[in-house]
Length: 271
Image (cartoon, rainbow, N blue to C red; front, side, top):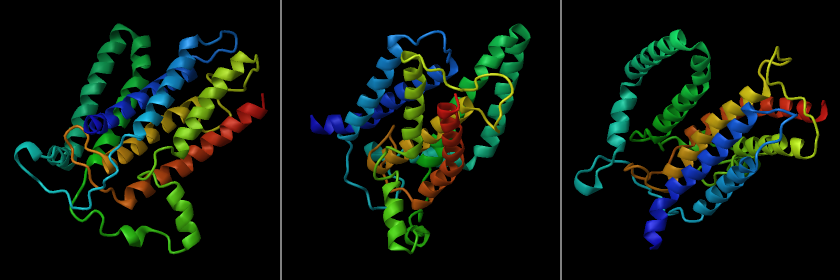
């Protein structure tokens, strides 16, 4: 029974995360100070947070120290196919872009409004797919430069361990995402109008809505990194992930989290 729960934990974790992110994006997109959100908006968000938190307790913490190798039979690793797709990513990506453009042009001719509404869901799916392929891709010797990439200072190492998303999942991106979504919900409950820019000409390089959308993409990079570092996933064997991938996520967070947090503060206190 424990083994079954451990195997199901990554999928439950991902379902909970989708509840948080999709509900959050829906809340941000439909922000209106005159109309209160339905109770379901609160329920889905809390349900996603609870489901994600509980599933983490059942993850397999026995890390695989060995290199990922091709195997056969029942132990076959689907990472083999991830490698093949990754090697042809440019060719496949170009084809995908052409197909999507053709579909969007056809839809635009029939109904321009629907075509524009489909842009964000399509981009969201592309981000998730790219995050999945990049994190699941593993090459021999990936862990070779692990120690060289880590900071030399002991104090900085302690700080970086606190935001090492291989060991825990609650990242800066997820924390800020949840706080922003709750501020949307609670502002209407208490009748407080926030200075969120949802249309018109923004005062900043990006709006809070686009910042939240970018955060959702980083969240899935963190999620896939945490999952495959601790458990098998869709037939892909669990393997230790390199510190380089963690640094990549930190690099994205420095820009996206910083700017989004600044705009959110202005929206809270500049209303």
